[in-house]
Amino acid sequence: MRTKLTPWNRVFLFLIFFVLYAPILYLVFYSFNSGGTMYHFKSFTLEWYKELFQDTRLLIIVLNTLLVALLSALLATMLGVLGAIAIHNVRKRAQSTLLGFNNVLIVSPDVIIGASFLILFTMVGLKLGFYSVLLSHIAFSIPIVVLMVLPKLGEMSPTLIDAARDLGASQWDVLSKVILPFIAPGIYAGFFMALTYSLDDFAVTFFVTGNGFSTLSVEIYSMARQGVSLTINALSAVLFLVTMIVVAGYYFIAGRPKARAGVLKK
Amino acid sequence: MTAAWKLTGQVKRMQSSRSAKLFYMLPYVLWILLFVALPIVLIAYYSFFDIHGNLSLVNYRDFFTSVYLKMTLSSFWYAFLITLFSLIIAYPTAYLLTRAKHKQLWLLLIIAPSWVNLLLKAYAFIGIFGQYGAANSFLETIGIGTQQILFTDFSFIFVSVYIFIPFMILPIFNALDELSPSLLEASHDLGANKWTTFRRVIFPLTLDGVRSGCQVVFIPALSLFMLTRLIAGNRVITLGTAIEEHFLVTQDWGMGSTIAVFLILIMFLFMYLTGSRNRKRGV
Image 1 (cartoon, rainbow over the protein chains, first blue to last red):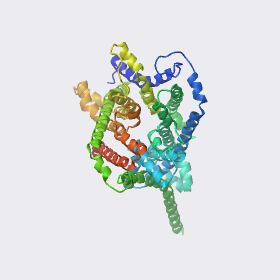
Image 2: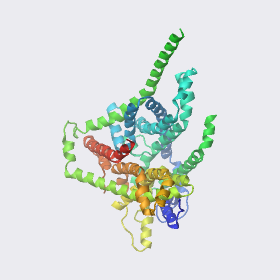
Image 3: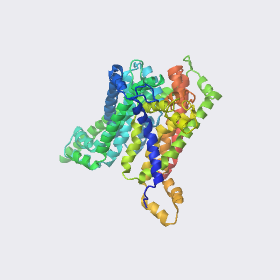
Image 4: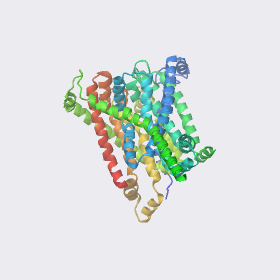
C-alpha cells in the first residue's frame, strides 16, 4: 500500500527543504562578501571572520551564553529528575494536579514568562543580570526535563525497587544504583532539551537581562536592529556549523538505540 | 520476636521512605510555588495598578476601548493566518515524509533549522527581503520589478510561518507515523478512493497531531514581539508586542500585566478548546 513518492511529491519536498535552508545558506554565503552588504557579492574575503574572532566583547557573550546554558541545563536536570520521581511517587489525582502546574510554563508564551519573572525579580530585589537570567533558564527548563524523565519512570517495574529494598539497599542506593541508571536515557534527553531551550531563548532573557549582561540572542537582536553587519553573518555561519555537528552527533547516538542499551548494561 | 522485628523494620522503612518522598517533593514544590504560581499571581496583582502605582481598574477599562480590542482582534487574525498557512504547508510535507525512505533522517533535517537561533533566521530575512535582496532581484528578473517586501504584512506572515513550520510538522508526522498501514489497506479494499481514505480515515486519525501542532503555533504567534519589530517594522502589533512595549518601553507594568492576564485567559481557553475532545476519547 505504501506508494512510492511521485516526481511531483519530490519536487514539493525539495521546495520545502530549499525554503527552510535557503535563508541560512544565504547568510553563510554573504559572510564571505567583501562588499559589506547582503546583496551584490563583490569578492571573497575572510575579513568578517577575522573581525568576529577579534571581537572580545562578542566572544565573552558567546562564553556567557554557553555558561548559562550548561549551568541551567545541569541544575534544571537535577531538579527535574527529583520532580519527576516526586510526581511518580504520588497518587493519580495529585499526579495530574502536579502535571498541570508542570505544563504551565511549557504552554505559556515567552512574553508572559519574561514579564512575570521580571516582576518577581524586581519584587525580591534581585539585581538583573547573570543570576536572574540563570534562574529564569533553570525555571523554564525544569518542566521539559520532567516530561522527558516521567515516561522512563513509568516503564520501570515497581518490583525492581522492592527487590532492591529487600536486599537491604538504602534509599540513596535505590536512587543511585537502581532508579537513575534505569531512567538515564530520559535524563540525557531532558538535559539536551534544556540545553537547546536555553541556547534558543530570546524573549525571556530579553526581559530579565539587565544592562550589563547579554546573551547571544539578545546581542544579535540589538545588532540586527541597527541594520546589516556581516559579522553577524560570520557568526551565524559558525553557529550553523556547530549546530549541524551536534545534529549529526545526535543522529549518530540516538539513531543506534541498541548500541546505547549495550553501554547501559555495563 | 521475629514479628516485632519485622514490624519495626517496616515502620523504619516507611519513615525513611516518607523522608525520601519529602526529599524528592520539596524542591519541586518550591519551584512550582516560586516560578509557576507566584508569577501568575503577581501578574494578576499588578494588573490592578495604574501607571502611578495606585490601585484601580483603569487598565481593565482601557483594555475594553476600541484601541486595545482592535489590537487584540488583529493579533488573533495574524495568529490565525500564521497557523492556517503553517498547517497547509506542514500537513502534506509530513505526509510525504512518512512515505520517504530514511524518514527519520529527513525528519531530523526538517527539524534542524529550528535549532538555528531564531534571531539569525529573522536577520537573514532582513537581507533577503531588503530593497536589493534576493527576493527583489528575483522579482526584477521575472519582470515584476522591485517591491517593498520588508515591513509588510506579507513578510511578517511569511517569516512567522517559516519559523513555526518545523513545530507544526513534528506532531503531525508522529501522528501519521503511528497510523497503521492496515487501516489504509482496509479502506482501499472496501472501495474507498484516495481522497475518501484521506478524508474519512487518515485525517480524523491524525487530528490529535494537528491539534497539538496548532497549539504550539497559535499561542506563540499571538505573542510574537521580536519579528514584529525586525520584520514587520512595528506595523503589526500583537498582544506580545504590546506587553513588551508596556513593560520595557513605557514602563506601564499595570497595563502590560492586564494584557498578559487576557493572553493567559485566551491561552487556557484555547488549550481547553483544542484539548477537550482528546479527553473525551480517553473516557
